[in-house]
Length: 305
Image 1: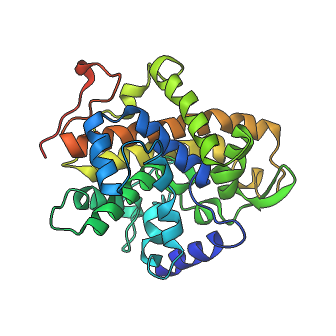
Image 2: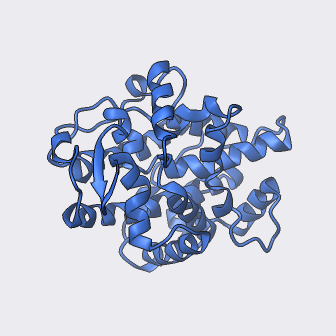
């Protein structure tokens, strides 16, 4: 398992690093969460992050920190925290099993559990508490990217494809190429604009009737079970559309309009889920309630912290 992790890191660091959703997606997840956290949670998070009350991107601007950290000598240990290696058989069967798939060095699910505990551990230094929150902001985005919940060919990193004339790999086009084509850029401004559109879709648009199901059963007393729900949800898309037709249908191929158009609805939905869940999770951690801005009290989740 150690060899697989080191090889994953090596491949991911070549040319353009494969980091779930890339900068654009992660910043968008953070920006969506900002739209749904309560005022108390926002104040708590800003305090941990040393962000001013007028900082309009306090979560979005730290959402990519964990990807930068993992490529440092100090942060190399955290590489496995960005994924869980589902040893399933796409496209015929997709599944995630914690005991089977979370390696001895950890995975996204165990890391979310760890940093959920650490962010409220009053014994930790301010620096370590801040690190825990930054990991959570990032990892709740990672876990929604389907290929971060898949072991096949290192989560698609070893499946070579061509997209828009660029030779790259399957993992990278889901992380970066397709989201950036969809939005037309990768800046913080682009992320904030995308977040605005997805927030509207969550509140009153295409996702309004789905959003309650995205956070159903959240429990900070059983983080592994909660995070496994999110990993399993994302993993289902590995069978379709990510690897519909099998590995041979994409390996070495030019993935054109048909593939892109099938992917776009999933990309939008998964980014929206990541932001909405992050807001609910931070609210649950800080206040004991996943009550979100704009949600009815009837839909509130509570936990004994």
